[in-house]
Image (cartoon, rainbow, N blue to C red):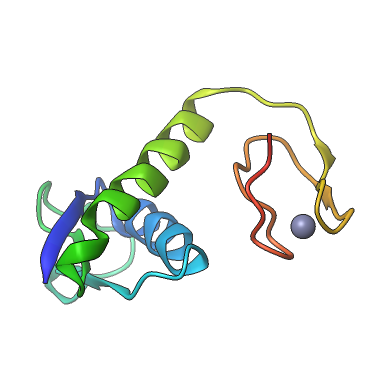
Length: 102
Ligand SMILES: [Zn+2]
């Protein structure tokens, strides 16, 4: 197992986890149980995302890089080139078929 991503919060961690799983990687979150109750800010550096297969590290990093780039860039809503689903802006990947959007 290797830690692939240091999350700011549980939502951040969950988004990255979803991206990695959509990419076919076996990923999981560590540290979420250390976070306090609802409304409480989790301490920084506690929540992280891990992958179980070390050989997938490069692929995982590529996925996270795409994810972070998508977070930064304002993108227009568009249709998935693979399945034709309508996708809101700021998604780097089709929620329906997981195709990477251009
Ligand atoms: Zn699609």
